Image 1 (tube, rainbow, N blue to C red):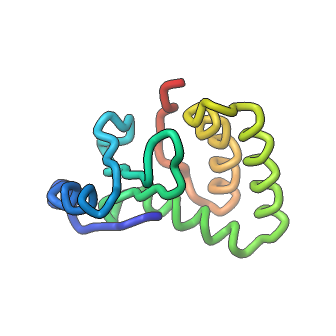
Image 2 (cartoon, rainbow, N blue to C red):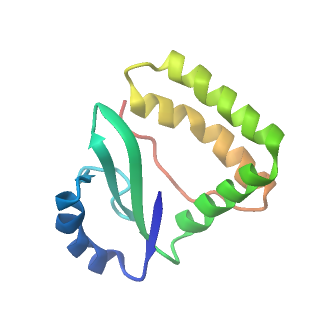
Length: 125
């Protein structure tokens, strides 16, 4: 899930409130310079992700564009689903490797949509 906010710095005050509601905050997130990243219910069994970002951040535009392209193209949705299933099997037990391996697909889709993918480093594997 994506929660665009007016100020990332001010949104940090919501972390304890979100924690009280069952969200776990990842303070060591390599993307912490542009987002607050939270998960539920626990790191070893994540079912929900919440990214809190400043609304004007280029990552917000990229995430929304990627979502919109997938919604509009059933073939591309199927390709992405197949990729995710294959990567799930290849990187079982290494969530960061799985996430990193999806990067090339996401970048290709964004470029085809006319979006320059924002800089996003690899997660530690």
